Length: 257
Image (cartoon, rainbow, N blue to C red; front, side, top):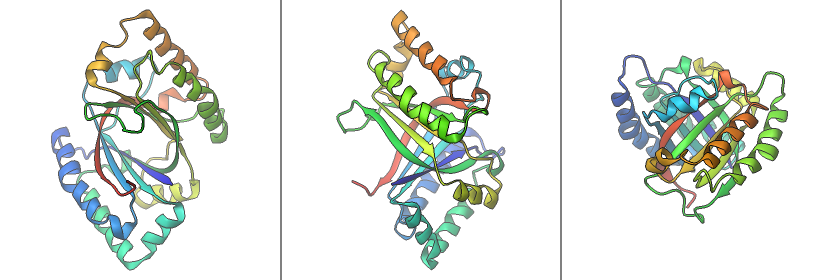
């Protein structure tokens, strides 16, 4: 299974409200209608939550500001993705979606890349986060002095278990790392529409609710755990090229169930 991550910045002539409405109520159903032709298995939109916590997440790390949202699309394999777009039906469906994206996406300030998911923990017993859950979305660029493989190894083998050790104290329900793969395919995506260069991955951490998040940090142990994670992130993350912000997921369809 592979996952395409689409880091979306809205067109400058659209308000945030108009952007989110069009993306969810117009583009989402359009993608669902093309799912069979494009062999799409699952499609999720994660919309930016405008909340003061975003500035706290950014400032403590010295990061860039948030973007408007993230699209995630799953295929069974890279070969299945390529095969879908190689058919006349798939090519036509891809064209329909590409044309619609021009109505709300600023391509020059967006990014597209393929990833492989690494689930670190899921304390929801497989039920998934509830409807009130919020997601801390971390767009990761590797440190300049590391190879992508070195970044991924440290992130997965060292940082992943560290996060897991603090899951209870920080009220984390689920944690997934998605590591960037397929550089040649990503380069084709970038050249096709003039996207920004791909990132090295994305972290997603689900918290049961916004209220849970807002109540966090009252205990010294919570503050210490949060700072320990930030310190460890500096081992493999280029902070000035990365982002961390809150989103809320909208599941458009899931044909894997």
